[in-house]
Length: 285
Length: 286
Image 1 (tube, rainbow over the protein chains, first blue to last red):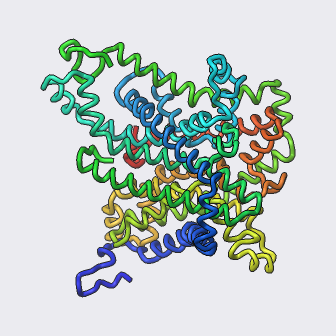
Image 2 (cartoon, chains in turn cyan, orange):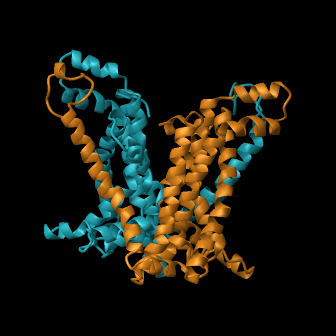
Image 3 (cartoon, rainbow over the protein chains, first blue to last red):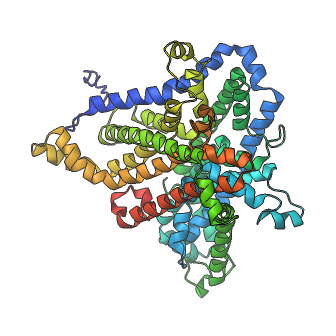
């Protein structure tokens, strides 16, 4: 495996550090057992369905609706997180204010708070009698038990992804760029929108795709607030659970495969855009 | 951000008014999205007073949920700790073909829905699964039992420790290890006395995040658990069951324990970032 071929092709570059073979071996075996075989099993099961069955299960109307709701809500939530996450990162990097350290730590709360806890808390808040739901109800707005509730839950879950990818890149921005823009006659607004933000595009896009991917698959925080009405507020992961509870394994498998294929291809496209925009602008990340 | 001539202000900042506006907007957003949900957990749990709160926590099913959560995290986190260190050693310390692919595959569980992460194990080990008949004839139960909960949790938290260590070990380079080896240390001695002390805070950081997720995981665990009361319910699942029974005080009481876990995690994380920032990977330095 590590023998260097005379043609010049080398599996690995020589190193004096020991343990490469068994460390790589352990990594590969463990990865295969825990991740690759189980995921391959999913695709194997769906292949066993046959093309016709797979097609009719995966493109049933209820399934299509659930996929549309999952991807649509995740997209809107990720967009909202791009706006507020970038704003938050900006405020945390550029300004000083009392309690900034606490605010900075709080941003990671969605990473640390179990999703089920977030789900019941958000539902209580946004329910028609909740702290936020009651004033909104007076305005005639209903959040909990509608797709808007799903978006709120996904904003909660996705926020730290955007902040934590944009923040370190923002810290590295060279002030000289801004000074140059100002010297050349740009006002502050022009400098921010035409000089600074385009350079942050790759990082923002990374944050967006992470938040989006997380949102598409999210289950725990959504099911309490969503209301879970078929065709209206039923997300794809919930439909998988429902099919499993009905012992309809083929349907659950088919929905899962479609979800994974869409997610993986979207991440692939986003990676391509990112590589392009990093070449075009790029402060890294 | 107001239009203002650059000569009025420092050219690389906003007017005080714009600054206050942006800070205010961010804080209102955080209040609505993060702070209020956290407060709601505690106020709902204490809605009927402290005695009712304590009483709902002393339920035997809640105890067994706490025990199970600790057991599952206690098995999963060390497994991922060892994997994370070994994978980071492989990827950060050596140059080999296919390294980028390996790195991507380790991250794969992050882009799989928790529900699907549970489903794959049901399809493999469940009664109708690929290995189901064989497991049944040998009397081994994985799904709707502790092994299934552990497998799903290991899958979900798979990348955490490796993600934290790979960039850190890449930044540190191989010079320390090469020095130790050239002075006659064995491979193991080099690892224990040179590498491990170098990465210990980064490792702790990764374990902290891994543990928070392991204890709080809901979707994946929910699919493989079967919700057998007092037996296969972890704390997050117990929260769901109590909530769906309209036993809100009890549901939020269990939720406060999980929220406290989250707060402790955040505090420890902030302490690590504050005191040992030089020994964490660059993206964690604040």
